[in-house]
Each structure stands twice: as C-alpha cells, then as structure tokens.
Length: 379
Image (cartoon, rainbow, N blue to C red; front, side):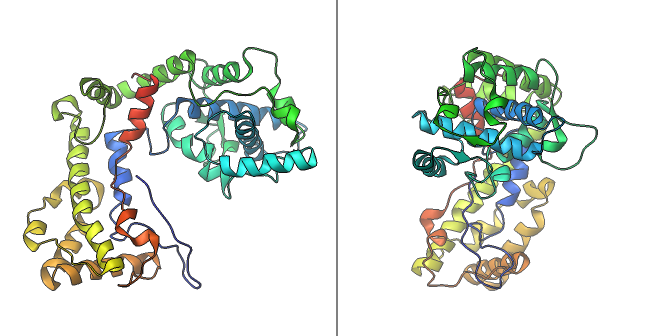
C-alpha cells in the first residue's frame, strides 16, 4: 500500500501522513502473513539481483586498504547503475531516475561527476534499492548477517553461499556485462565517473532466465518451511488467469494463517474504503459522512485481534456509537494525531494529501507477488 506525506509544520514532531484513521500500519503486518517475504516495493526480480551484485561490489571496494565504507560503496554502485540505465535510454523502475537525468546533465557540462556527492535520493540507503529489497532478500536467504552483526545496513551483511546470493550476483553481473571482462569495482573505485564509465551498460529491468531460476529456487526453499504460502498464491494466480487480488484466492488454497490474514485484510479494506473517503470529503469539501451506526455494529472486529488492531478498531466504533458517527470519527482522528505528535485535520483544509482522490486502498503486497509471477518467478 502507499502512503503520502506533507511537510511537517514548524514545531511538530512528525509529518502528517495519509493515514488519518491510524489503521493502515497494520496492513503491513497482515501482509507479512498473507504474502510472506514480499513488500509493496519488491516488484522486480532484477531488484534482488542488483542488491546481491551491489553488496558483492561494495565489499570488494571495502577490502583492506580502501577508505570507503561498504555502505557508501553500495550507494556508489546503485547510483552508477541508475545513471548508466538512464544515460543509455533504458527503462528502470528503481527510484532516482529524475535526479539521474540532472546528474547526467551536470556530467555533460563538467565531464565527470562524483558519485559520493551525487546521490539520487535524499535518504538513498533507506529509500532506494537497499531499503526496498533488503528485508525481503534476507527473508529468502539471499543475504546473511555477518558474524552476528546488528543493524540493517550493507556493512553487516554478506551474500549467502552458492545457490542463492552468490549465484544471483553472478547472474546479474553476466546480464550487465554480457559475459565480458568488465571490472565493475574498477569503474567505481575512484568514485568519479564520466561518460565512458557508464557507457555500454543498458540492461533495464527485465530479468534473465537464469535470474528467474535462481530466485525461484531460493524462494521455494524458504516457502516450503512455512507451508508454501507463496506457492499457494501462485496457484491462485494461475487459476485466475494470471490475476491476483484480495478477491482471487480461495480459502481452501491457503494455509490456516493465510486464511486468517485474508479475512482480516478483506475486512480492513472494507472498513477503510467505507470510512476514509467520506472523512476526507468531509474535511476538504464539507460533505456528509454516510457511514451508519448499524454498519459499524455489524463489523466483525475479532478478526483483527491477531494483529494488535482490535483495540484501535473498538475505540473507533465506541467513539462513533457514543458520540455519533461524524463526531466519533473526528475524535478518533484527533487521538491518532495526538499519539503521532501531529495536528488534526480541520474542516475546510484542501491540502491535496487530504482529498478523497488521495485515498489508496491497501493491497497487502499482492501486486508485488503478481509482478514477480508475471516476470516468471514460480514458487
């Protein structure tokens, strides 16, 4: 699912989020049980391959006698790769392409750019390739924590052995270099690149057959230990003609935990789509909230007990039944904002993030699973 943010007003401790009811965060927890190992951002096989290759190159650059950390070296690799794709006119869905065009324009003017100061994103390690795929790559055994290291940065991770991380890095290197003797670490060692050092690297996002085979095998190995939940979703996907959404899976096709997660996901989506657009229209357009007390009474909130959402749901329903639906939703929203340290939405505010059109229903990482299945990953 997607979130939107506005800039924090002066004096506030947090930014205002596009989750006015405070119910969306639990969608991530439900998704972990419905689609284990995937997130809303893990939509490309090549994302896993590039993460593995980037980690390999990062530790190569961080070898004895080098002054660059593995974290900074990984960012060098990612920036170089996106610059190479954009410069060659190849499509990539990795973040940072807009900034990459600006960096390429600077390269034309000056002849070269410093990768360590030409980052593509403000917080690139957490919002770029590493942040998007690290958790999932660890879940599927592609990368491992080194020596019991703590934290979430490249420094504390190494590639898993043959059959997973090492092989996926090798497949990515083959895809990038075409089997030629291109020394990626050598291109990045100085941290300064010119047109020559990013030339000839036009790969795009489409995975090779080898990448698909390796990633499928790694996912299968982990999936089997949990009752094959991703294999179950792949069967649903195939039965539905290569389609996957909350309405696609049959309960009989899922593990017991997936069944509970699917019921909770469907109910959470129902509640959000019934209440949140109305609340947004009430704030920005002065519209009436149409939700009824009867509809709220009929909700089966026990479905959320497993994901620590029951108390919040019951609080919302109690506010509405005791105070009236409109006032109850406003009181609940105010309480959510107080916990966040942000300012409650006020009627008459027409900020784009608060409009009904900004509402985006949670999809529980199912589009990510479908995207990988569409590419040919078949657990």
